[in-house]
Length: 374
Image (cartoon, rainbow, N blue to C red; front, side):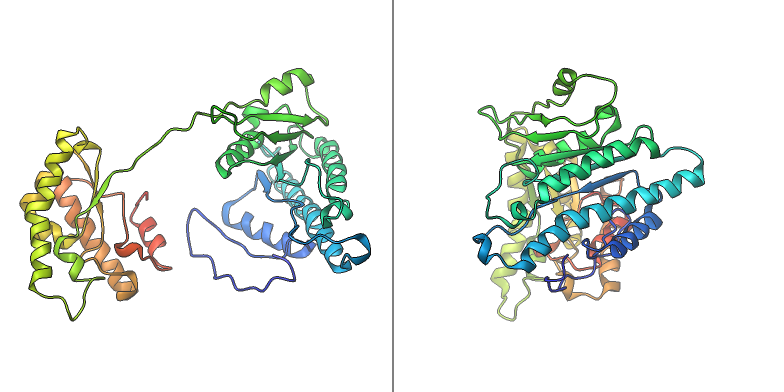
């Protein structure tokens, strides 16, 4: 976040798997506080990933005589000064942890990524005029050189990308892994645009310093063949039946015809679907999201579904929306539905689909508390 942005973001929810921090990355002190906070939450930090380094708003370009000076300064502060501040404070923290443990931190790695780091830029772009890519190149080489004095196996590498998010994620994980690229430091890598087979390649475009091998081997090691694209389909059923008219679908105009439709769904529709899935060989590959009300109202039909070998997941009790309940009621409903599903299947459910896809700030922590996986 920079000084020109209005702080309208909502607080991050409490989670055991995610710790969010909002800070000004362009200044030294905030990044130091943020890293120390993360270290206090998780312990020693081994890997630093700096995404979108040197990326700026290039929707407006100006001739040099009309370039706003504040835009030049902001670009430099965020792209160069901010990156240096994060790296410096990360390494200071690593040094402190190593001194306390009297041992080197394993897999100490830094990966900087961004689309503007190695590709040619418009001469009128703020990043180009501020010299951000060039300064970052010098910074990476300096860090790569000095890392050996802090940690004998520490590494820093740069990734330029024009790829889809999943390709970028795979490449960052690859460069951050000591097992995969522990012999590489100071390297500039780029992700190619997917070829006709749908595969993506990672290639070194400019080598800096490296350890214990030659450039030819590095080029071979840094080539990753992506998989061909495959179509994957998730098949599931929401067994709402009558519950659809009790929670999110509750309305004064609901009449007996509506409830009759729900009864038909439970008594006729669900068994009909089950027969279809069995005919197609899909019955044991399905996930049925079943409200607690449907479990109790149609026990024979639900038992047939369980016996088909499918997965049973939760979908509220009476299809109530998250904000139709207090936080205590949300917890009580979830616990009741867990008990109902466990009684049916002999095991706790691990899947949850929110009725009408409504979740609130307490929903995810509550699901984590009860061991849900998705």
